[in-house]
Length: 406
Image 1 (spheres, helix red, strand yellow):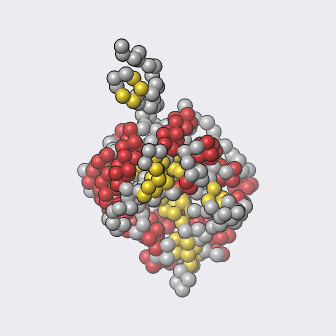
Image 2 (cartoon, one colour):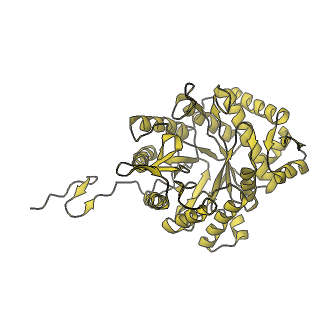
Image 3 (tube, helix red, strand yellow):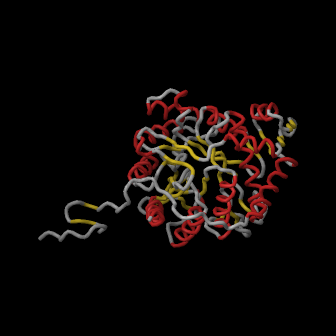
């Protein structure tokens, strides 16, 4: 006697194996509600003025001779000995006039075009963890097999709009060439856009060229129709290392998207107060925006935010805290002040796919949505403060994202 067929969403049917997780249809996701204004107009202006003070009087350390030369030719105050660049508000204003408030990323399947800007919201997989975890095999080093499985899940779920930079690091592969294997997996296992590694010129250019090949385009054609993006992680406080600067300039040169994202943890790499951290974040982000426009006016660029706090007892990064949620909302206000698309992130410091992991991620996700993030990076699978990509957490996060989409 066969088991009666269960309703939609049941775990198993008698002869068809596990049932698929119900999901919303593929569509461009928009946020129809007004963004939350946590800070007053005067407070936003005060943060802006503090950022200009930082850029004009203290400057940013830039460890790339090519970038130093660009700033010097543009009229910035460059001190080559400490590799420090000071820019004035006029240079910032001029750069912002050539940026775009919205743009698109087109992968090899145009049905998965990513719209950045306005009230559109996009979600990506976690990116960068050196470890992977699931309940059957436990915690292990990142590897190409798990990378491919996670990429297949990204292709399956409609609410995952693009892939981040290496959903996990395949550490068994040579460090200087593993990016080619991950790009190849992205392009053959999915037809969605992805983030390329911008650790230096070579890795960035490889990703651009491989996306161009998959679309049947030349590099010149890709300049006017971008298909990939990257995260430029500023080495806060106030430093662009050579590899990040070179990656940024390469992406801008070839017309590909850049999200300039300071890594400002309150109490560690930035002031312990939210206002101080936001002023530093804002200065570093605007500096990177200026560099993209010096390379190529009109180059697509996003305002990136990754401000949270640390545990003051251990020094460990914390996510999903009230400060983190506030920063996600306030950073959206700053991005809109400058007319830039906004990249933000939910996250969790939990070591397991448990209640703590869910509530911390949901707190930060609310901040990202209320702040009108256009690209919600690390949206699915983030665990252990970003040290681990978790299969179970990915599924929990997909459910939370779909709740938000509804």
